[in-house]
Length: 206
Image 1: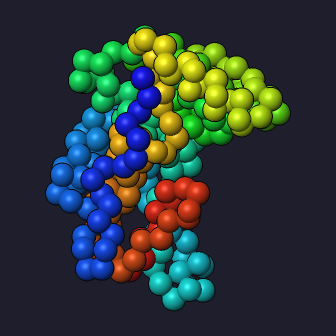
Image 2: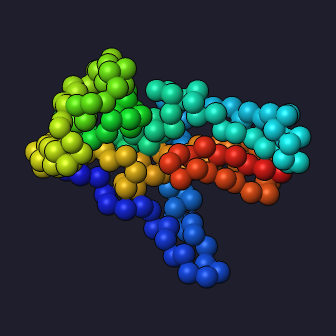
């Protein structure tokens, strides 16, 4: 059983149309309530020297201090917690990742006592592989990304198995979005929010 493809009902991105519907915002708030007791509310940090150089007050959402050291914990935790909350208790969680998502899925599955299997590239950092195993997941090495993707898809087809993808799943996206929700809640009004394409490092400016 794979995660629902694609995000929220976010995406009317036509000119002058809001990106977030009220349904999406309500779902985001529900995700935050769902995981708040399980993840860390990470601080906003600032550098006086950087602010001086750039002429703005810049704040960084320090998700490096999050569980497993990354914001990925939010998405994995919300996806699995949502399943349990809705009575869809999987017998196994699977994922394909060689990075922070692998550790996040292993950690989140362990919170709920659900066995997890993570398909990783065989040449992954030994530190990351051992960290994933330390959270209780079984790590299955694969020759390349194609093999990992094929094996996780096959595993997800087994009854009682749920695939937690790293990003293209509604509940994963909502969980990741709680980092920005917290930052904006703590900051109040801001002039801009910047996020790197490969992460949800939130940098409100005011």
